[in-house]
Image (cartoon, rainbow, N blue to C red; front, side, top):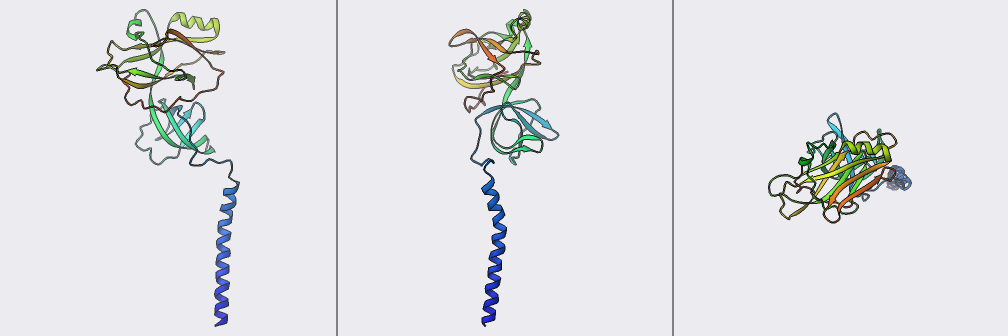
Length: 252
């Protein structure tokens, strides 16, 4: 009977020792993992561009670089190469399989994505020049785009048109001071309801000339009238000021 009890005690001690050996490496790894991210880490809203890769996609974020989404709940998202988005995410790892970061996407909102267009005397009227309500900090230049959030006075029927345009004279002005000169044009078509919703748009600036110092944008402001806003390319990219719902916007 004594021998049976002794054998049982030895087996129990051996089992405990094996369990301790199995748990200890994981414990040591977690203690040394001070530089990793936690599930509680998340970013503010950031501007990014969708890049497709076969049937998958990744994000080229203006601030964080290339992001590989590891979500399993994004299958319903229809990725379009070049689509601009506002996103926030939980960073999980750095230098992940050729990407700057692996991330869990927390929010992903498509943004109206347009190009810089040519302004001529023949098409000036169609672009309009109606005032916009833009708060300070809600317009920036990053990732080769002019990014904009504004409070749209919603139409009753026809979508408003928003455009970034450049005249021939403005093209020549760039050679004089080293800045890309352009105009933010807005056409409400006279269709206003007084109801407001956030609108978002991102304009690709095209191939900026070598040595370009920044972008100068002329626009009509609801609060300040005709203004010119200057963005220096040397400035660090900025984040979107806040998380906003742009699903109610009516823009083209």
